[in-house]
Image 1 (cartoon, protein in one colour):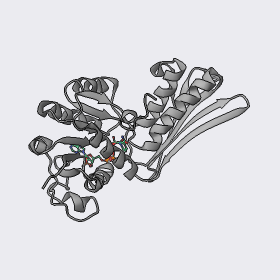
Image 2 (cartoon, helix red, strand yellow):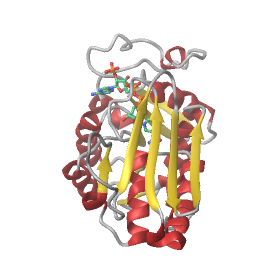
Image 3 (cartoon, rainbow, N blue to C red):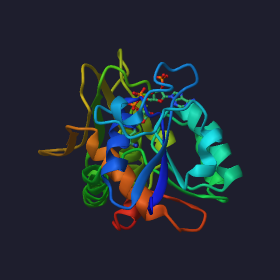
Image 4 (cartoon, rainbow, N blue to C red):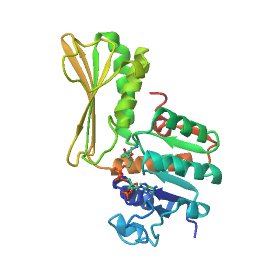
Length: 272
Ligand SMILES: NC(=O)c1ccc[n+]([C@@H]2O[C@H](COP(=O)([O-])OP(=O)(O)OC[C@H]3O[C@@H](n4cnc5c(N)ncnc54)[C@H](OP(=O)(O)O)[C@@H]3O)[C@@H](O)[C@H]2O)c1
């Protein structure tokens, strides 16, 4: 029987990993070939389908991507930034394309991803939701029209387990605004404020972070001008939206030459 494209989900026991196992299983043309957990994880040896809250899929969770790569066509990795880089080295060696979901990479780690993309096709996006990727385009258009007349602030909220701040999506929204306004985000970003720091510098882009409970992910870009305010908000209510987007990216990536792609390309939205 044709198994279609054989997918390894890395970080399978995680919040996103479980949603990905379900999304891969549900998508025609893809099959779950491997589910990978951290060495020492209690999930190792369990059935990936049961772990994801469904029926058994006959795929036993392993702790070694290297051991299963031969039987896999494409890797979808939503583990951690650090683990992703190690897995990426394996993908390059084995010539396997990958869809990368982790956030919290440093600038030099992002450079390693760009380097890997010279050898294998990669999609790397801080947010695989369709709505957020549409919001990136709306935010770019708003920034271009409002120009320097509006102060830009980016607010984001996530669940209590999230380890990086601000979110990768908030940073991407900031990059899009900075690009549209001809600013360099690393020079104008302000991450939280405290104490008497004087009036707001007009060129800055501010970030505010909320962490709590089970919030899946919320982002607002606020353009505050004299006399009016524009807010562009996206709220994710289920991780399934990210998982379905990542699986769509996997199907899109198959058969492409080496290179680094964003979700806007997968969705055919053009550049920001
Ligand atoms: N791009 C997007 O659309 C999007 C959407 C949501 C989340 N994210 C990002 O995706 C990442 C995962 O998020 P999450 O909420 O699912 O986190 P999570 O629940 O902590 O899941 C991460 C999983 O990866 C596992 N892991 C750690 N090291 C590993 C290794 N060496 N090999 C295999 N698995 C390993 C963890 O295992 P242990 O728990 O046993 O350590 C855990 O099961 C985060 O960086 C998050 O910001 C991206």
